[in-house]
Length: 161
Image (cartoon, rainbow, N blue to C red; front, side, top):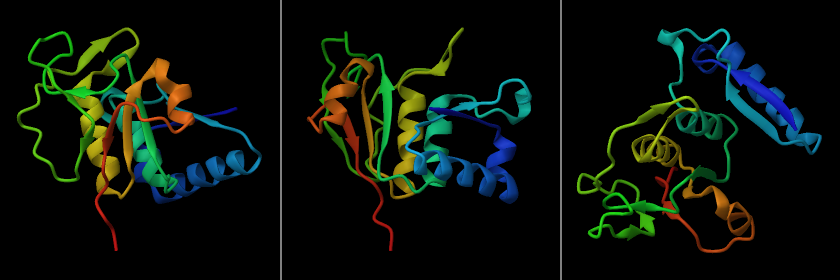
């Protein structure tokens, strides 16, 4: 593995963006998995990604990823919190679907970062707008994801010309 630390400025500055892309392409070319994280030591409050879901979506677009997988402590997207008896699991979200009926809640902020359904859906929207199919799945289902099993919620991408 190789660690890549990024800031919002790296994604906005063309030279930094190109350097980040080349670094990730080189790591992948060497058979290494780039571990991407926000460079918290230099990112000020004003120039932070805010959450790793957003960062993942931006990086997937940067590298023209085939897919984006967002991992969560919940196995899929639900219409209500999973413990709510009204909750219905969503297996597929088509590009452009209005999710106003989905109770996403607020972004959670804790010692490990910012997250929750709202950040996952926002990141999925960013990636699918860039044409990247996105899967939301439970962290403990990663081996099933890699094996190609049907898990989580798929967000279908926008079809790009």
